[in-house]
Image (cartoon, rainbow, N blue to C red; front, side, top):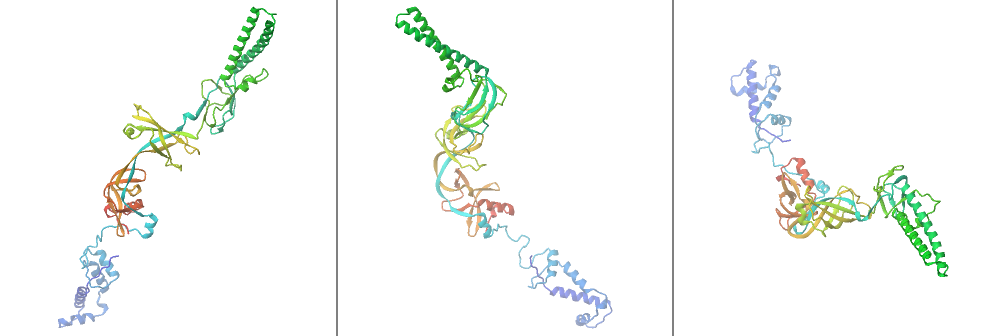
Length: 451
């Protein structure tokens, strides 16, 4: 609280005058004017006047204060609250001094304030792209039933790991039963014709069979072999392995169709249920090798000049705790989509731990050749305050805001075109905390000092 003092001389004089008037009203007499003070001071308290109240009125009505150097306690408070005048020191205490940002040493340490020196450096030219993780089509296989049938059993679920050749589901197919039956017939005819032809060959060699009968037997054997090979190929096309075909017998379940995993990987799609009828033109399962995925981008036509196949890119997902990955662009489409005005770009991304899940949105920086800059600072040191781009610089035991003009930048550093010079010290870490203190304290951005 401000301290205010005043001069007692005029107050005492005014009090004496009031006492004189009061004494005259009660009949006190004196012939000499110089005795007025003595006689009035000798009057009793029963003169009918409350002098304590009169003094309080004087204090409350006083409009000015003086500087005699004495502390008058509560009386001075009353004078200060009612007074509209300044003290004798000539200063205006209504606005004592310009606002300053004060930070204790503990607050500075808590904010992690660190200093660095602005100097020359290299800036990687980067173009930011938004993309999405997708399945690697080169490592993915769709399972389509080779024949129509009824789903009897499903042995996997989405997310299951499978090996090539594992049975994924079992169907019951009438078409498959017919194909197997035809194969068994063809195999029987082939075996029979083979035996007949062998006997005919022996008779012919011993001159017990005519040339014509021998040729007829040979032709029948050839046709039986052709039919057998055709029936076998049909079963092979329906997904049966050589071992399954060779072991096929009339006593087996001819309608049973097993859907097997064509590659090792993860089941990422399943679109059927037990008892459902499925055709031979619908994908019911998809198995993908997720150890490698694609990341695909839509590149704006304005960025195509700085995005080319073969460039290095850094991919990251800021919302997830996934380590960033560096790879290179494999493909940039030579055609621009008419509706989006973008071109498709793609890169392959190793995914040994499965962090890069298909469908995940990501950000990538395409790295172009470096450019040299005269003054470079840490990116986190640059702040926006009251419409200006500023950097905090130390001035003695304080920090001041310096407007700057930015140039090229990358993820960690930014070029300063004007505002800082080589060798200038600046706040490299903790600048946001200083800005927050200015904003919450309501200080002018040009008065942003901190002790």
